[in-house]
Image 1 (cartoon, rainbow, N blue to C red):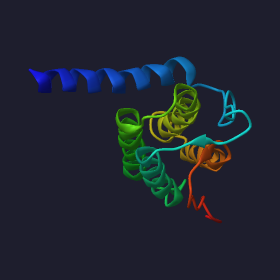
Image 2 (spheres, rainbow, N blue to C red; image 1 turned 30 degrees about the vertical axis):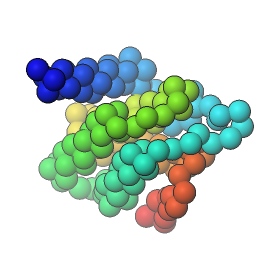
Image 3 (tube, helix red, strand yellow; image 1 turned 120 degrees about the vertical axis):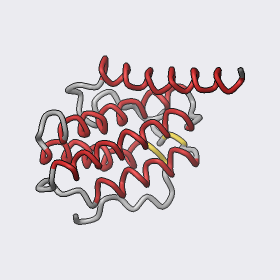
Length: 148
């Protein structure tokens, strides 16, 4: 019974994240709606840092000229990491709200590379979100995207 409740709770969390994306995720850009924490970057937790590093790894090697299966793998990888963030991050409510802006952009990029068949735009949206991330979140050791 307890396992059933956990599964239901996780499904609601993931579904809630997707609903948030569909309601709020279109057309705001990586920095639209983001706020600092009284002029300071938001604190991060280990799950956020791990998930964002994994997302960075996916995006940094993504090629706009990749095959449809490459784009599907990229989008699936982004979705898996977003699901991980939603299930595991324990941030202050305002920090969580800021994170949802970035999550929406990452999911928008995933949608562009697959359903909209526009890999260059999708990857650009994801890269912009990852370039914005360290401006708002204190992630020690974040190495950015480099010159790729």
